[in-house]
Amino acid sequence: MATSTLTERQAASPRWRSRLLLMGPAFVAAIAYVDPGNVAANLTAGASFGYLLVWVLVVANAMAVLVQYQSAKLGLATGQSLPEILGQRLGTRSRRLYWVQAEVVAGATDMAEVIGGAVALNLLFGLPLLAGGIVIGLASMLLLALQSHRGQKSFEYAILILLGVIAVGFVSGLFVNPPEAGSVLTGLVPRFEGTDTVLLAASMLGATVMPHAIYLHSALARDRHGFSPDPAVRSRLIRATRVDVAGALLLAGVVNIAMLLLAASSLRGIEGTDTIAGAHAAVTSALGPVIGVVFAIGLLASGLASTSVGCYAGATIMGGLLKFKVPLMTRRVLTLIPALAVLGGGIEPTLALVLSQVLLSFGIPFALIPLIRLTGKREVMGIHMDSRPLKIAGWASATLIVGLNCVLIVLTLAGHS
Image (cartoon, rainbow, N blue to C red; front, top):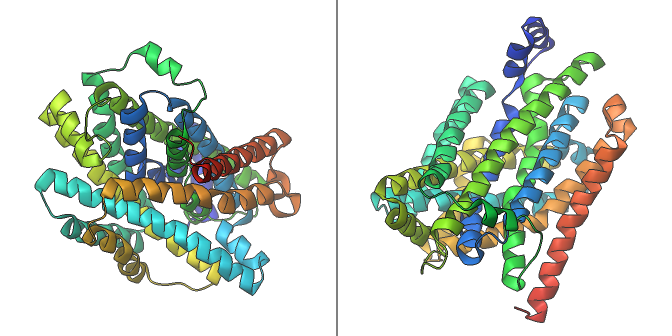
């Protein structure tokens, strides 16, 4: 864990260098925003409905910046993670029930990430999906071992490299076949066209504003920088966190929008693009084998990085809410089982990915609402309490997310299309 000595050394550095030294935790959290679930949801949206749902990604990414900043600020201002604070405030029964829903969300996340990595290995090397899932699980163990033995900064560097690979993998296709600016602008107008678009919007939202990233970021920021008793030092760290979050989520937002634009410009109307494998085949056919390989490598990096971060988040949730810690490697093995069951059971991977993201969307309020309440309380945050505009923006985000899920339920039960 970082100490005040490290903070003092950073304070003595030139301003730009000091800010660079403080960056990192948000880029680890940002991996959650470019995982295979995003790939499935965004490609399906673009291939099926063109540019219609671009606005969903823009709104979701704006909310993600707000949410991740509040989570990191909570960890820096209190010295505790969100799950730890909730674990202290909830009664025994409530705490266990709350952990169950958080664990289901973390499990859905991990399943999506392992499936995505397995699909990538199948596309690149023809490896059977079940075998690919096992390889991804083993590779993620190596990344988690890096975090355990070499510290958080080494883990951050590894994740940053993978994030760069992801960005190249999904943005490169746009340079070969760029979308029309006018068409992209029409997608910024908020609207739906039937139940399917609402389902996809909920999936995209669940894939962008990730519950496990909300829980995790407070721990990442706290563990990287430690807790300083000096309010001035905490204020400086929180200001640097704004830059960290803005940079990381801007990159993640660009990658997400690039996925949808790639599908809308190159895959619209092509049969079979409702699956990742079909989309990859269409990308390869339309843009060439090199772009197809780069696309698959981006998907592989996405699955590998995000499943490592997801396992880390699950351990943070369990430790905070149950006050019980399971070794990361043990947890990695246990959480791998549901994903391998899906892969071995012959369930269509892309459908499993999209449905997992819808489930995540329903888990967001359980993480987001407590976060907003806590960061808005002076007795918790002290001088770092949310300002009135930040409180309004936070509650507006929560209302929009819950409202979208309610509309989804009503339309689905009513059978509208």
